[in-house]
Amino acid sequence: MKKSMKVLLGTAIAGAGVGAYALYKKYNPNMMNDIKRSVNKMSREASKSIENMM
Image (cartoon, rainbow, N blue to C red; front, side):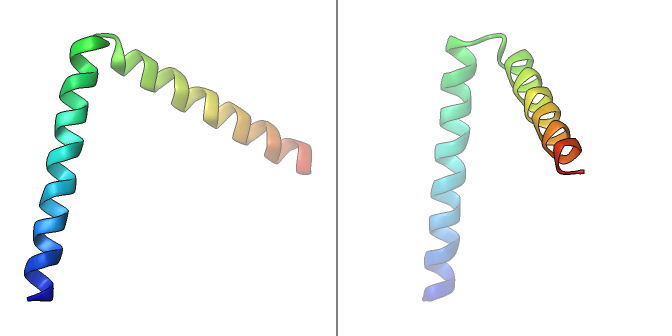
């Protein structure tokens, strides 16, 4: 019983994620560029904080 509930919950969360992704892509066609920019920004900030520690 518990295993089936976990599978059902996981499926529901994955379905909601796919729906949110589709909706976001519809309203923001440049989504991949936004994601790349945010990842690059986070990695720059992380490397700067590491350099500041040393």
